[in-house]
Image (cartoon, rainbow, N blue to C red; front, side, top):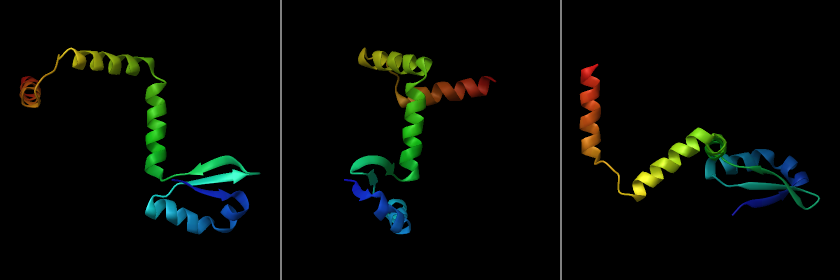
Length: 94
């Protein structure tokens, strides 16, 4: 659950709120005139959101994910040990 903080309070408590986000992984929703204006989240969560947005904007990546999900649904899988063995053989063949 995010802390909801008006912009005036955000200004006066910025250092404390940054510590809450960085150290305790809190979320802070900053409001202006009672309406959400911005969110403060831990940097790794922000980076994950950015990466997800990038993936979702790439049609080729979405097609690859969809193909993989289809293969999985059809049971077209390979055991991890078999995959490792195949990769080791390919590396050795180089």
